[in-house]
Image (cartoon, rainbow, N blue to C red; front, top):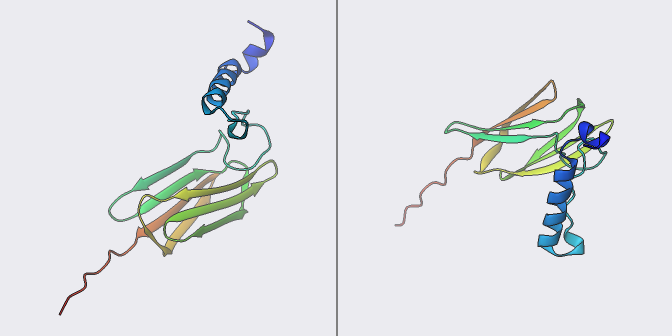
Length: 133
């Protein structure tokens, strides 16, 4: 076992997966990068997780944004997609989350506590029937 393997035991595995994915995609523009989550970069990293929970009464999006201050988070929604933009000292997050059902973006409420963002939407009203006379 090399000394480095004790610090990052899965690096060799991730490098091999990356190599196989790039080989499978067979293109220079389609390189997959499983870089360490501690790298500074854009977008959600491996240390960030997004969950979507749907019930009859609401749709809840929960996202981990470690190290981000509440004032550095911007949210936008068009009823079908939630855009989360956030910035910390070491990272910039900019993610579009496709929602499984249409929501009423005007009823959205959001909370942020201990690095966890939670956005709750009411489902969009169903289309009303059109009577033909």
